[in-house]
Image (cartoon, rainbow, N blue to C red; front, side, top):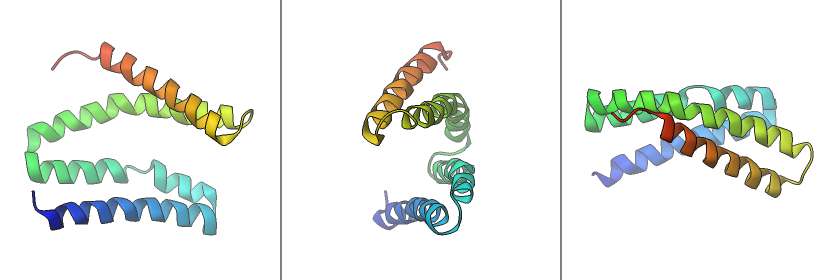
Length: 113
């Protein structure tokens, strides 16, 4: 793997995170949420995977992203709920634990390909 290519991927991914933070802090949290929820990360992962591994691996990646987006949605909802009742760190811990259990459950329920 080319080190400069790896650096480009880190810069692109970091730029998305910086953009989300900028929009949330300077413009409106709603717009930061739109950027965070946009399929930018999915698109970037797909492009980089396709360029290195081809179509078959990219298709498997996309269907896995679909199924594992479900636990992520639950993570967001649980975190939102817990943050209304507890401090940030316990809320993050609880939401992450919920996400981990959901990932294990989805992984167990997925058919073997």
